[in-house]
Length: 239
Image 1 (tube, rainbow, N blue to C red):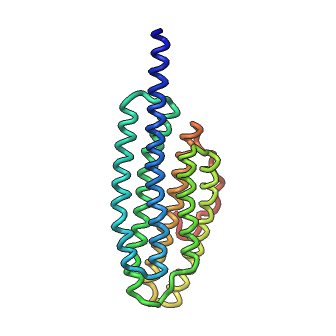
Image 2 (cartoon, rainbow, N blue to C red):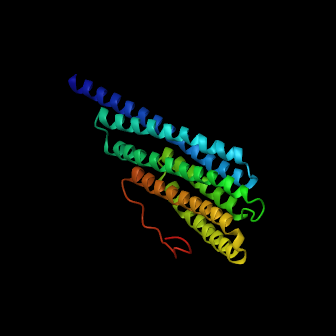
Image 3 (tube, rainbow, N blue to C red):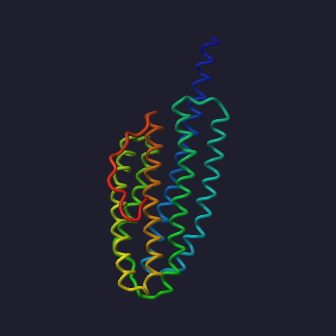
């Protein structure tokens, strides 16, 4: 009888843990949605010279910060309440790291939005390069896909996200070269071109952070580190 009661207690605790982890996944997915929207919206504001919209992106970052704090609180409470299984602990620790990275992705989108007034101030000296929106689209898709992989515990999906990082890197190299050419040919464009270069760098860093999340997702799902990816030349302007 006692053994049966203990088994029921263990099952109840497991169900409670599973429910808490599901809520945590939903919270992190919500964070990812806000970060993805911020990336897309900041780029729209850049292309349309929407200074008011850019200001709204900056102000909306506070909501992402609040969700980060709530997610961290839930992870700590989850770990402290009862000793979780190894798999649950891996996911909880991964979640704790992921929320910080997603918040940082939001900061990069906010930084892009902050550039909009400076770029707009120069009027039409240099139009935002056509490759920047495409670069932003890939970076935003990576954020969406990697958090979907986290919710689904999809190790293969995480690996696919890492494979796309090369696309973002190639975009960055192309933008860097184009902007360097602009600055050499027209020194008066240096200020605005520098702002666009910072925009491209922020997008490149978003791609890097998406791959970092992918590695955490892979470890949480499998208990193993993701196999080392084949890396090419680091390219111009990247460490």
